[in-house]
Image: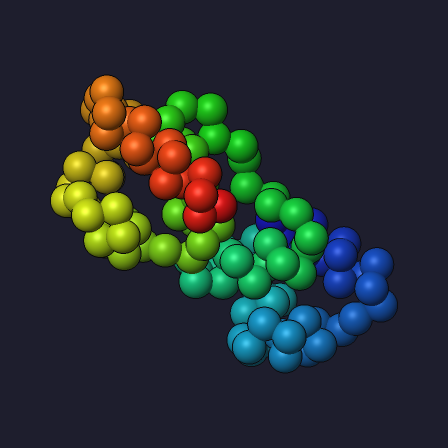
Length: 118
């Protein structure tokens, strides 16, 4: 993600301090992201997606990966998304890790819900 962030910044002729100001972080945060020293926090992912104009995260293939991708795009923790979905956070974590999967109507309802709020 760091390389993509740096490329976009340079394409826009911006300094790291400009990007930092846009995102509400320190210049050293942007520097660290660009150098892949540390990744952005979950809450920063939506702002980075907005800045880049696309989602640099890998596309989810399994249902669990799709849930995780949606959650990260929105900057939501497992606990917060579980609350939105009215399910137990442990259950959601198991789905994301592909240890289990929702079945039947629940899976259909979740797909519909994720499609509606995407």
